[in-house]
Length: 394
Image (tube, rainbow, N blue to C red):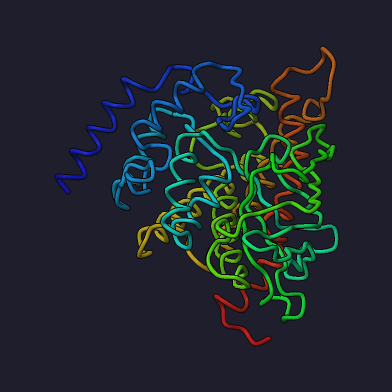
């Protein structure tokens, strides 16, 4: 316990000295800390904060120091997260490299793959995207048809992926491909990595109802992938793919956690008004917001308990489906409560009658509708919970 207290003081002092003031404010969508070969930073402090944390190993605090992490144990990670929240620090670095492919490589990658990719993920040098879903293979992901044909020391990959988030900015892709078309569908899949600048890769962004294009179609035409970029074993990619989905679902399930944004109560008091005791004037809305806050707190404590009880402090297996399901429902409900609080001012798209904050909330509300689809639909998560957690019969 004394060691934990000393570590807390160390982190607290480091944050006070190194976290810029602008990185202690709610994070706008256009200042999300990414990285990669084409990264641009609207706020210079975003890059400064990422670099300072990367140097300390704090972009991936639980990773081994040899791969760019800080080598923290579970208790130290909890302390680090608490101290980050205390000063309302923004995440120094985000993305699929940190939340998905990085943890998967720590489990399944070769020593060479770890040494090549993990330090670049931790530093923000390389940005990753995911090649999973296809036009005919979404919830039934194992029916994918993108083919990887043996060509000596390489595979030649041909097919199409869809909903590849950030593919138009990504440097590398981790991708599920079919390497044995005659095997049962779950057994003929392999997991490969390739540079997005490889000849034959082309990307087309998809415009969403939010007005943004975070998703893309990705076309692969005889893309040459070295066999050294095969992760784990040939035709055993489904093992890696499932594990990576657990990391993804845990990450999605944590939506709304971490940095403190403007609270529902603050919005409600501004747009609905306060009664003579200083509470939200609308009793029904006040009750709904209190219930949401209690559920948020209970969910946060459940996630923390799961991490503390796990052996590694990493992905919690089938529980990731529970976290994904509940976390995304909480996030969607938050925006419905915002709509109730803000009324017509929640529906702003453009023009001087709406503030930038109001327009941002409108787009965030529309974006939240995808939460129950991405990373595996709600129906998929319910099936996993029924089978893997509740042990219900098929």
